[in-house]
Length: 115
Length: 111
Image (tube, rainbow over all chains, first blue to last red; front, side, top):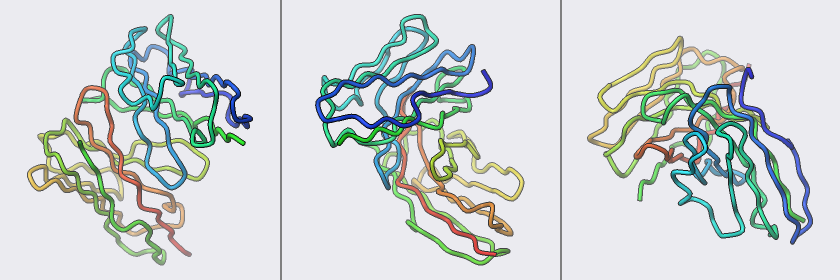
């Protein structure tokens, strides 16, 4: 596609509900990243995929957070038993390789509000 | 742990002014530094990427410098315009996967 596409753009979840956020990276991009951005803060790293392999998940805040990219293209970030502190914008990004020399492209984010 | 600080947190200037945004980072062992722009309700757009071996990059009215040894970068915007109003984020890459961001500088350019 022309850019990184994320869905849903907005999600309101009741506390305790499970949510799934989808990311369609730019076609052919090997690397895919998830970031969490709280209001007034910079994005914080959650996890990184190279093709279908999850190479780094050190930023996932708890075991309620799970990400997958089974076929090396679309990725899903799942949050189980959502809590109010999970309210944030979840940004997906992709690049043709890793960060070291290539431009990274961000989607517009999925805005999650937990009530 | 890498920490990135941006100063000022917010800046308001009249149209036409030249301005400088500052970024500092605690660990100089970086691969690169990037400046991003974020408009309200939108994702991030990469403006400039400076490799660790470079000193500066330029794109149009934007110029970014990097002093890796002192852990500092500046983004210079010449002849600011109302359309430049946005949040500007600085981020460093310390590993193959992790971008560490500052909290951003919110810029308002008034006509």
